[in-house]
Image (spheres, rainbow, N blue to C red):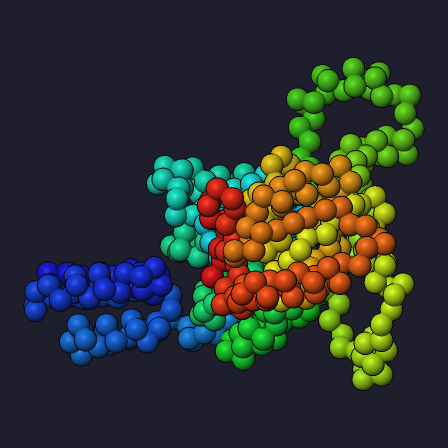
Length: 444
């Protein structure tokens, strides 16, 4: 007698539209029918028109309108630096309590694992968790034991969590209404909140579309610098020391012993040691850390003409690693559909041992050069030499600054063409297959 369809849009996105139609075609003519959804795409509206009698639509708020108390911010970085940017944003907001949205279950679990390994109070929420696991994670998050929850959109549906300070988009969703739904989880009950998007240059147009639909302008910010992060954390520690509740009666019996132990320290020495105890990890981690913002200013015509001139010295410099790093050559480039995201994905899934930190990447039409830590170089080369990338066998070596790799790439293309292998790939280069035929990560 009653049909309720909850999260109608997500049921559609997950491919259940045929099942929905099948179920609704069998329900009795005389029944009550309610559809609930955070967004209402055309396909769901068609289902409502088909199966409901004189339906009435109730809208709470305005469609695709961002919450008034939410500030929208974006950081533009290279794709390889997204996780580094995420950590800096978290470190720059010592009291952060937020949800990090990822596009896939796999990415959600990876980001959560990295955060946990790096010492953050974080955990994941996605469709592969059992109900018991989900309940445990949500209890810890509601109790503020966890400060960061990494989630997919589907898993986060129906969550009722108060006082979120931040929503972080680890990349933008395909559907603009989904962004509105994400950002609306903060800034509730008259409080303010921040919705952050960490994007790369190819997501800029999507950002502009979101701005038009929600009637808000995103503020571009620079990724926090190490100096700024450490200063924010120090002031936060000072605030915590000021506000800490002291139980005089309970602590009195321990103070004489502590005083005998630390009495020889001056006030300044004691303060330095308290600060160092809290911040040695941060100070060590951010020592000599580089800026990671994406510089996207377009050069003038004169600059473009100057940049187009051949530079032998510059080419040689491209083959030289940055200080403390090793330069790796791999025989795949932009003309093969091989981009930074593919490289990072392959390294994350194919190189055994600890995760590889990648430095400067130079993508050429027929080859690529990138930096890794010297200790990781041999491990990376050995792993890459066992990979097939969309039918193209990869070859890698530690780059020789004196070797002309562009000529080698031209010769390789010419040989492939003469052998009848000059087929153009179909543009879907996010999949890679290793020698054993195991599929790697694929993002839609």
